Amino acid sequence: MSNQGKVAVVTGGSRGIGRACVMALAESGFDVVFSYASNKAAASQLENDVKVFGGKVMSVQANAANQLEAQMLIDKAQTEFGRIDALVNNAGITKDGLLIRMSDEDWDDVIATNLSGVFYTTRAAGKYMMKQRSGTIVNISSISGIYGNAGQSNYAASKAGLIGFTKSVAKELGSRGVTANVIAPGFISTDMTEGLPSDEIASHVPLKRLGQPEDIAKAVVFLTSSGPYVTGQVLQVDGGLTL
Image 1 (cartoon, rainbow, N blue to C red):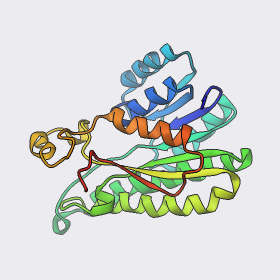
Image 2 (cartoon, one colour):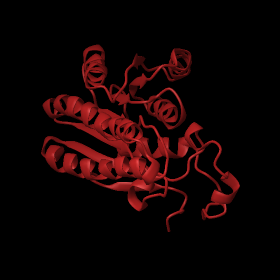
Image 3 (cartoon, rainbow, N blue to C red):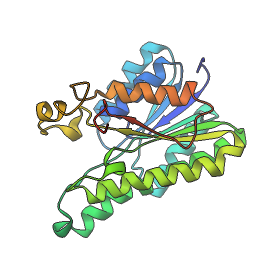
């Protein structure tokens, strides 16, 4: 299925999984708008890298956890390109710690970025998608949101919340031709997992390796391009870790 003429918005797109998603969506034909937090140099480099595919690209500095900035991101995409066909909510943070010692700030910051930020962008983009009676939303969760993880009560709660949120969105917007799905990555080689014992983790994965950002990006392209009759689902991309 051709994605020429379609527009995708990716939050947290300048590095890691987000960067891979931007590249893969552009390669599949989408024009892409992506947000970044502060690294302008990385955003500019990604814009240049995307241009090789011949589509349009625009970066926007925006914090999805800020309602006004999240709205601005979506409005800019709509104004510049005239439509939004796909929204990939990828922006996320971790502030790990044991429950008993976790500060209110660490709890609030993770919930604000990983869950409230998705609410803000989805609400804003959903209005445009409902009007055009088409669109797809992909929210990046985690296997921690399904199975939990010690030391990540804030992160797991935010990622579990994404699953319930996405299923509700799928039911609300389905009659307008809008799909909503979740991707739950396992251990992926990014800055977020740097420092973890990768060899030990890989030994428990049937595929015997950690995932790469491109593994998640391929799933994103599938759900935004080839899965119009798939909605409200959770796709675990974890190499079989949770079997």
